[in-house]
Image (cartoon, rainbow, N blue to C red; front, side):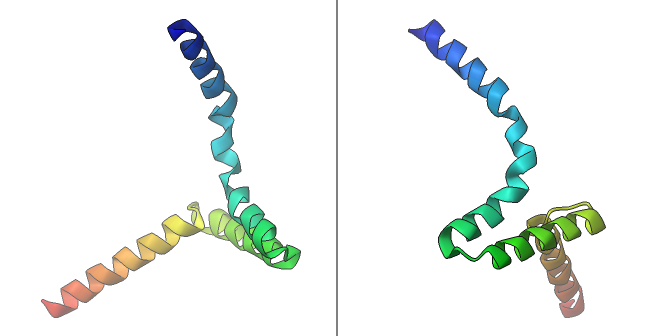
Length: 79
């Protein structure tokens, strides 16, 4: 039983290791599935792709970096 779980685990890791590259499609796919709006999903994908090409970061990382930078500036102004 233990050997079977190990073999299944190794198989799943090898099979799913390439999924990280396709995470950018996950957001628009969820949008399309929940709203049914193809145009909104397409715009979301296009925006994410443009941000990735321009900054080298995905949209969420870029936004969080901008927010952190603003918070640091506010702290410096208070001091």
